[in-house]
Image 1 (tube, rainbow, N blue to C red):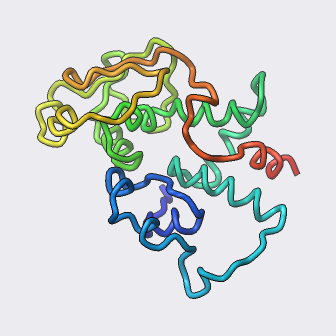
Image 2 (image 1 turned 180 degrees about the vertical axis):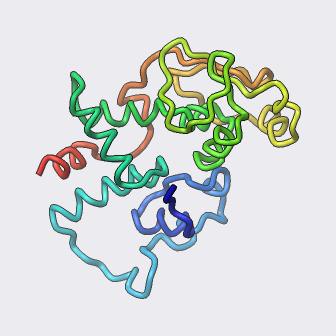
Length: 207
């Protein structure tokens, strides 16, 4: 399956904001965006006024890159959201938040969405007691998410249990001592901390 293999720090610099793609490093002074908050490349420091299309494109790219997806999969989320009742942009972000890899990240089991995705792919995560190794699996209210008992003894998960300090979204519950939690509600727009104007993405795809 195609995936981005370049430097993820370049993505934050390109979008002009922190996408928190490298976990704790993004909160430290080692963060590439903190040290050099300009677009990558020879002409990164040049100021260029974006067109209406350019502004919409940057918002789409920002969300795509934050959740670690390529165009085809991202467009599918938009199409599903457009067919739902309610505001399309909010529906789309809510669907993205309900991805299993994102839920694992939000619970603090993974330092980044990329690491959380790896945990899911490697079969370390259980949903309602059954192994699910599909990162895009959509969780529902009442689903129980946990690290597999055999995996919980690994050092990387022990460290997570001891250092769990990330604020927990109100639509999730998590017990770091048991490495398990639950989905208690559908995430609403106020629950999603991504700084993005999703209506611009809707306008872009509606052309």
